[in-house]
Amino acid sequence: MDSLPPELIDDIFLYLAGGNRRQHILSLSLVSQILAQRSRPLLFHTITIRLAKLSKLFKLLENQHQTISKHIRRISIDGQNSGLVLRQRLPFIFTAIGNKVDSLSLINVPFHVQHMDFLMHFPAVRFLEISDTTFVSVSQAMSLLSCFRLLRAASLTNIYWNDPSSDTAENTLPFNVPASLDKLSLESCYKRDVMECLLSLHPPPLILDLSLGLLSPSDVGAIGRYISYLGARLKVLSVGFSSLDAGGDAEDFYVQCPLSMCTGLESIHFEELVFMGAYRLTNPCPWIAKILSALRSPVLARVSFSIHLPAVDSLSCLVDLQWSDIDQALAQALTLSSCLERVQLRLRFDGELEADVLDAVREDRG
Image (cartoon, rainbow, N blue to C red; front, top):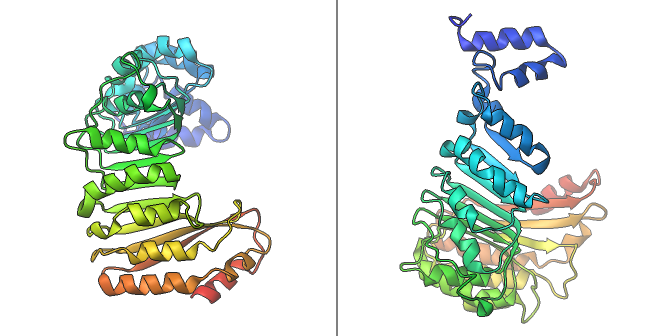
């Protein structure tokens, strides 16, 4: 049977199994060199490690016949309620499967200095996500980025740390963000501290694709300094504003972030241009239009907006917006950039849509 092509063996077994038995065949392939040879790169590509399944995974990896480890490319670790058990088991798991993993998610994983040694078993990681975690200092979060020398993209979401003014020698770790990192996404974290960390390095890393999530006024100054450093090297920018009222973070961003220097900007996205889940005193369009008018990139190719609407009476939320302000700013951008080819509205609705909503949007906006 070993002489048959693996694709044919896969098809024969899965056809004969049929129905509920198909899952049994796939389970057997965890310890069989014959079954599902063609399918393994897909079947075993991603695993999620949770406390409830940790012992089973540990036993599987200890099995000398296991076939899963060499095919795993993405790992998601959910450390909720795991604590000491996770720290005890991770070293062996990382050693067994880490050398080819290129994407790693750390969710609810309490920071511990020992993790720095464990993470060294992932030399090929290029994509890192850290979420729902609390650190003592921002340097601890940044030090995790330093573990991956081939890192290309990082996402920090819903993570917290103490004010840097309270840092001590005991809770401050050295960090050196890899030069390969060129994409960074920040959401629900203290973005100003991350920007200051980047600017403290010599030289600061060049993040070409920067997603800032929703800003707060206290973030804007540090963000403006980093964007000023990037200048023409910034290619993609995504930003949203918690307040589009006078004196809010949209005005601060317009004043303090020198987008006119970003002459290499190819794409800009505005998150939550309209968000009916939050109360706003003023129309969001004027400040967005001013920010667009500040752009001086001759290679700008795409401008996009996300719009969050209620499912009921959705269109009435759009009628009063001063679209002409944004249209005028986009027309100005078009005169500066012959590359501008797409203006995109990403509509998100809360609940089931009325039947005529999408048709009406297409007709009204062209």
